[in-house]
Amino acid sequence: MPIINSLHNDETTRIVCWHLTETDEELLDYLKLNPYRIMKYLTLNPKQAREYLGLRACLKVLDLDFEVYYNQKGKPYLPASRQLSISHSFDMVCIGLSQYYIGIDIEKRRTDKILNIQNKFIRPDEAEWIPEENKEEYLHVIWGIKEGLYKLNGGNLWNFLNHYKVEKFELKENSPIICWLWDENSRKKYHAYYQLIEGYYLVWVLDEESSNQ
Figure 1: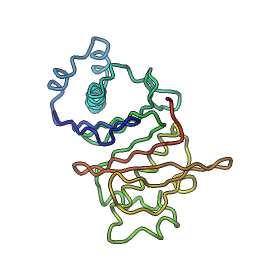
Figure 2 (figure 1 turned 135 degrees about the vertical axis):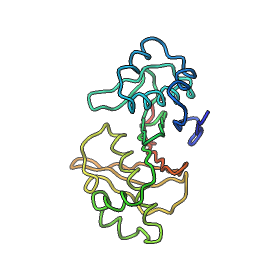
Figure 3 (figure 1 turned 45 degrees about the vertical axis):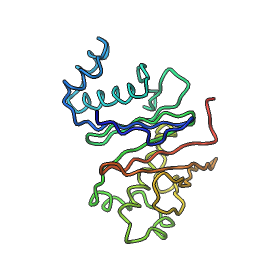
């Protein structure tokens, strides 16, 4: 099966991605969904249905036979002690499961798009240290970090320019990157990590000061 597993796999955090190369019929045969999940699958449009099968496939790899619920802000959660984050892009679906608060983002590498939107999420003090020769890769990683911060904090509508900041870092997969979120009342530091897999940038952000254990 096209599983990309153990991207971050320790006693605190595990991330699983599923590359949706199978047909729906092959995925349904693998998953053996119960009647409730079959009915849910049948109510979705084709794109949502494949994402749902990818989500169930990731959960199966994690040995989690739970339904995924969403709070009022749209943040996913499980009826379990671990924190959950979900992301999908084109034919890739990823799940992050952690004892820490976690936000993940997966984005297909698209040079023109990321260059066109850079002014919407790159702060002037970030632009100062981004090297021109690796600019596209840095932009993808920083975008993923800010998306991860957004998801980790429950989808609060903070501004990517004013409330999110990424400190200078070197391009090194799976190494911690310091990032910040602040508003009028508080300022908080997080650690982000990234990995390039099959033309996709996977980024995950952890609040390593939090724990459900």
